[in-house]
Length: 223
Image (tube, rainbow, N blue to C red):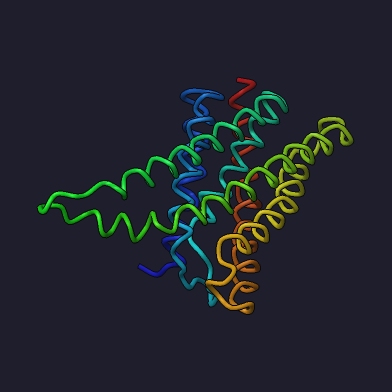
C-alpha cells in the first residue's frame, strides 16, 4: 500500500481515537492520549519516508493530534486543564526516556535477540527526546496562550480560526526547534531545511483536517 494512502488512513484513525477517548473518559481520556502520543511520536520520528514527492519524518500525525487534544482541553475545560495535559505529556516522555536508558544497559541473556534492536532505537532517543521536550514545551504553551488570546478577542466565536491559527504558528516553532535540536550534524543543511518544511506542511494539513473533530468534541461536551 502506498505511503500516501497509509498516511491518510492513519490520520483518520488517530484523530478518531482522540474523540473516542474524549467521549469515553472526558478530559482524563485526553490526558491518556497526550501521554501515549508524545512517546509514540518520538519513536516514529526516527523514520524518514517519502510521501507526495517529499521526504519527511514519521510521527507528524501523532504529534499534531496532541495539539487537537490540548485545544479540546482549552475549549471545553480552560487554560489550566490544557496546561495540565502538557505537563503530563512532558513527564511521561521524560520518564520513558530514563526507563529505556536503564533497560538497554542490562546485560541480556544468551537467548535474547531483542536487545540489539532496542539499543539501535533507544540509543538515539535521549537526543531526540531532549529536542522534543524543549520544542514540545515551547510550542504547546504558545498554542494554549494563542488559543485563549484569540478566544477572548473573538468573544468565543470562530473556533475554526483559533484552532488553526494558534496551531499553525505553534507547529512552525515546534518543527524548527525540534529538527535543529534532534538532527543538527546528522543531516546536511539542505536536508534539515527540507525536513522542517515538509514536516510543517504535513502538520498544517493535519491541523486543518482536525477542525471537524474539535467541533464534534465541543458538541459532545455540551450534550
